[in-house]
Length: 104
Image (cartoon, rainbow, N blue to C red; front, side, top):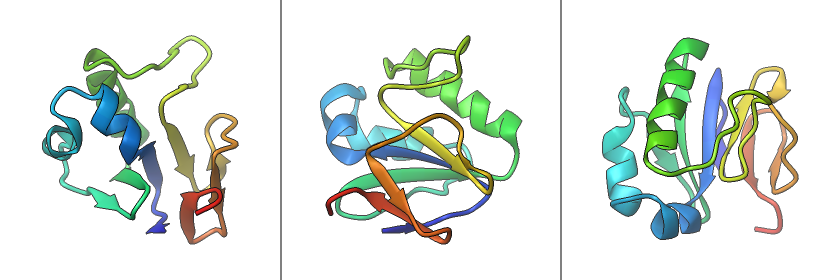
């Protein structure tokens, strides 16, 4: 379970290990503001400004993660903000202050 801030980029750690070049360690290094947080199942990065979030999304997209910038959604990760998920996400659960992988 991880705490929620303004914009939270959330990705399953298993997917990072399988799909992200350099895995979790490289993902941590790629976060420009060093806000990495994790639990047993998910990894997150937190951002105060939407432009910083979308700059980071461009970075991870270049590394091979899926993001559809026309329809604004990803099959690989989710983004949660104070208004909720930026696109539909059925694999995460939240209670307003924390977020976790469903079933964990």
